[in-house]
Image 1 (cartoon, rainbow, N blue to C red):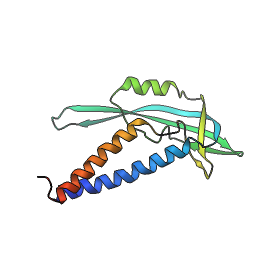
Image 2: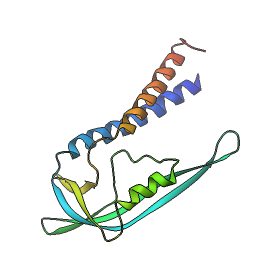
Image 3: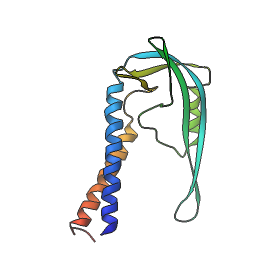
Length: 150
């Protein structure tokens, strides 16, 4: 029973997170654009062990940039609203090629909060896939609590 409750709790937290990301992603498509400069871009590697003890490496992108709005400088680090890690170092390198340090970028910024910004507006399909998986876990947890399974 406790496992089902944990599944529900984790699912609810993730649904809230994905909901916020999807909402901001949709809104960001209509945000104003400022010219910016990439301060730094790098790849992060994260290693973990799976249940068989094998080491699994996933990669992420870290991008720092600055931009001006109404004469005031801001800094940001969000490439997308669905920052998802990948198992492909090459895919990560291709992303980094688009954001070399010192390079010029278009920065989409929130007109109500100029410090909130993103380089690639909208919502990626990965976010929807993860949302469906989380909904599946939520349904599984609820079914377990109601005694419909196991």
